[in-house]
Image 1 (cartoon, rainbow, N blue to C red):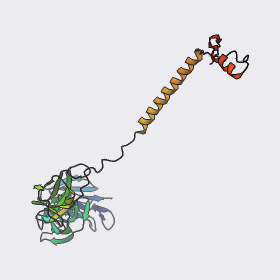
Image 2 (cartoon, rainbow, N blue to C red):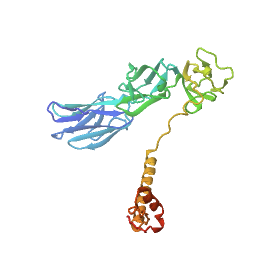
Image 3 (tube, helix red, strand yellow):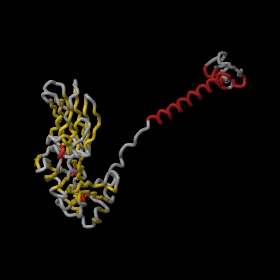
Length: 377
């Protein structure tokens, strides 16, 4: 950031210096080729600070850092805004040579002050925040952040009598319920300071959010069942009133409302309809509906049962295996045993003179039968 200014013959040089108020600045007067000429340092009022290695000026903040034929280096501690200006390095030649070092003093602004037009704001409305950085040199730059979102503000800069600056920035935006608790940061960008900011958390009022929870029954509502509904409402401020009503009709006379709960026992189809929970707070009201449809008392009972095909397949496999085993056992049994039976044939029929005699001989011939055996596998 330093700019080197040299004498007319480029033999004398120095640097510009930028320093933060309260810190130390160093001025260096350098000579490339010195023929034993005297070097001195003058302040913006052209008063001699150092003549060679001697300090005529009675300001102990100036201290000699280095003196040689080629350099005069001086430090100035605890710099203030009044020290700002052009310092002169002078070489006593014929004619004299001069080089100029400008000291710029940075003054950090004070801690920013953030203010809101209102402490709380309702959702959908616009809010305005103001951030002020008092003092500072040069003028500060103010940025706005709402959470991770950068906002654009309107900035005004005022220069004061002591060459300082006061910067004010205003930002306006509409809020939603999601902005409740959101941090808004006023961030100061300045070369003399880092991480300087002010923060404010938004407080947003919003109307209730409502939902209905069916506590009982689970599944279908049937004739004869009891119905238990719970209304849950959240808002800021917290809802001060929760009401139950039946749209376009009266609530059943024996229905019981206890706070946010609606209880109806022994349902029948005349209770069918839309039941509404309404919650309200200072911002507004909101509602949610529950549609009641009462089914027959046996509704849903005839639903086919789920068939477990894996179980059925297992049973069939076991039965088939048992049958197969039985067939194998029976086959092996009959293979190892022989069966015996007897047949009787009528004898004497061939020798009979006629048919009647043949029948008589056949019926009476049982005692003369011979045993015959047949085998089977």
